[in-house]
Length: 513
Image 1 (cartoon, one colour):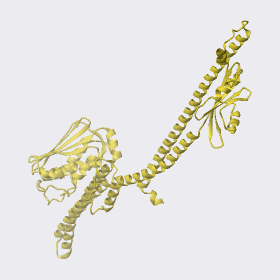
Image 2: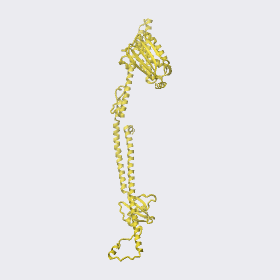
Image 3: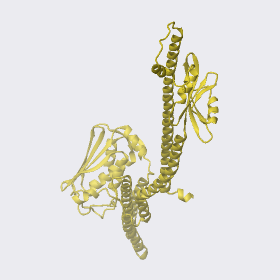
Image 4: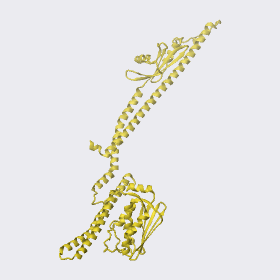
């Protein structure tokens, strides 16, 4: 049972059926109550209408009875002897023997009510003290129930032996006497109609819910089929086949959007895995060379006992230089690993940008003199900046080392720092051979070296491993700045760095780092 409710299709179908059942049941109940109310109102209106017709007839009888009495009184009080009528007139004036003279209003009511003929409607007239004087009700049991009509209200339902009757009561005054008129009608047809309506609902609602449930299940199954397909495809994807993608059938709907986002995620994962593979391969390659040199020199030194002290010192110097190169490379790799994992926390302090640039120029001065490269620094005034001092040192040293190493012998390096809007802009220009156009987009990648375009002296012990610009780009990113290759051609290259002055931006960068 739990596994069944773990299915989204089943849960969607149950929710759909639950909501639909509430709507249909509420609609059926509303229809039933509305129909019942309209039928009751129609029945009450018909009872009242027919009772008004009876009242009109009885008042007419009251008027006729009063007129007859007036004529009789006039005949009795006349002193004139009436003329002798001839035989024919006497016969015509003589009333029929079967006609009974009506002298009281009760008799008039009884005669009038007895002549009433309304289909399915019956009438009873009671005196004010509860004595029936006229009735069209043949059912004695119903007549007794009418006598016990509730004192409050004008309408009431009176149950009979096999059916229920609706009764309406109204008061009538004739010749100064109070009468009660009761009109009644059977509710059999109305009850049968409502019972049939309930049976229709009892039958139609379950069938409608059953059909809707089937339709909802198949609709949910079809709608979620792409999710199942994506799930199956995603289960097959691992680090060995990250190039595969989820199927996208309908790009504009929600599932298509989900598939596109997931495919973009797979693309980023593929790029990340590829970068890691390339990183490991390049790191292994870069580490193999100095390690091989160290091993070879140590084996040579150990293999010949007759070597001189100068030869030993030369071998140790080579081992020392390569160990320094290995140390620097391992430190760079460790720094990048901490950067990638988000474990590096910058130490923010307020520094002067001009002082940092001057210190970095002094640090590369010896290397620049060796290559006969002239360095010129232009910084205008104080440039306070909240930054990580050690990272900024590394940033400018990496860029200046590259500018010296890849420069012409006797070339020049120009460093210009200025304030531009809300940023400090630093340009580092060299007079090297430049970078090939096809390599410009790759220079910030790890272990990339544009050896074909830039002359690099591999005999120098400070030769890099292609990590300097990658580290520089990361440092600038930590400081919420930008590092771009502004220009590169046969006359040289220009790198442009922008660092924000705003402390709020620096605080945000500190928290993000």
